[in-house]
Image (cartoon, rainbow, N blue to C red; front, side, top):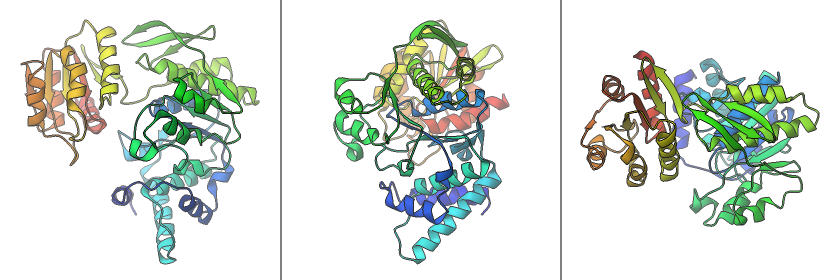
Length: 416
């Protein structure tokens, strides 16, 4: 396969849906030589914040002079960003190489009449091969869905587990109570420390069962502006480029994880923790890009909770700026809930359709936006929408509503 064929292959496999369970992925890994057995793992689960925690933790380890493989899903700006080595996406040639290896093994399993791995299981196996061949000191793994039956939980040992914010999501699969959801995620804790923060009583009833439980202290916000923020944590000051007040908790989880590794004898210092935190930027999550006398804010806010966080940041850090929203959502998402939070902050809307069959038609989005400001328009092309916004009267252009519009928007911004 070449790169485009590998991406198309995985995309085709995704059409068969999610497959939870560990037996098939363990069989696949065994047939590939169990590459995961040579790696040291930091495993992250949670409803929200997993990607941010993995970003902070990866950068802390890099600042501590360790080599790091990071496995995240889904990717936003390119398929190969699901597999990072020292924060750099896997090369297109290597994507083709490793997806070909796992695809060939899947074909052999099919010929033998065995249960077949899902797209995510194939990707996870490819990541394990890649990280082994790169000789990673650590592998930072983000759970795909839940924890107990997620492919990433097929690893037999880990240095630590992290559980970020737990809330209602995928209830048909993970359960309809926070207790059930927490239990699914708690299952990643296998003879290792658990780093989390104090959540609601229902969640803590489950997480509190950990034999080695490390609870984060509450961080204190010190300063915040468009260039970043600073916080006080355990009498130490940390500077963050990453925007969003909610990131303080995610950062604290990463700091406690790093301190845990230091207590195990790894060469992680306060200096490397501070350096790693300061260098961390999670692309597409309140990501600020300055362009001339204007700025773009890219955020994946695609549900009501995400819109609340975005609205809070816009109403505080960016309160004095005129705001244009380049906005597009999926048909199956709550557009009214999102607009109910951000609509009142908009000076202008430009409605777009996300590049997916699930994308809501821009004409429908446009009609919704008109209810919040008459200065609304639409475009059938995201690049044109970015150009329109940049040439308009607003000094802050917010791109949000669906993760799928961020990549074409980012490409358009770089061409301005």
